[in-house]
Image (tube, rainbow, N blue to C red; front, top):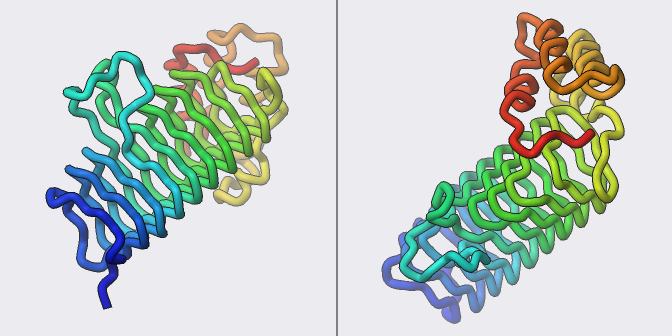
Length: 259
């Protein structure tokens, strides 16, 4: 029995692994590559150039790899979407390709859980093990680092960065960067504390969590200017490098951090 439903429309230039399951009324465009073990439920549309890794699951009515919603984009611009492995894309997810004005590529890593109605705009970079709840919307050029969680209906301004192990409460509106480990919520979002439960689940020990708590106090509770807070956080870093990524994040923030 064929794994491709007879109503699916597949461009002759598409490169699809032999075991990919493609449901009814799917449309696969030119210059699309789909890796082994992927599943496309009915009514998924994938436009190219798009490269998809292995064991990704796409639910109905997704639009994957469409042209960016950017007035500067023209049909002759060659940009792409690259998706890693073992990602889950629920119903009505939309993901756009990159733009030539930026990196030319939208990138999604591995093992991400993307719930219904999520929009990922052009030139976004999504790490690994990220969770986007229903109706999260990312503007262009957003970077979301590993293990971040965005609650339902979170809105992210263009060029924002969301740090590792951070947590954004439902309905958050982000116009600035969210540092590693921090929990935020609100419109506009403000810091509410640390993602302690997430850190425990990720295997951070008590000593590391204590160091992270001290870094939070330096950043948010001491009245420090950002430069002073970074210097204090550098002095707190341990041999495991618990705060190394946080320090790098703060040093390279271009939009400023939520405070």
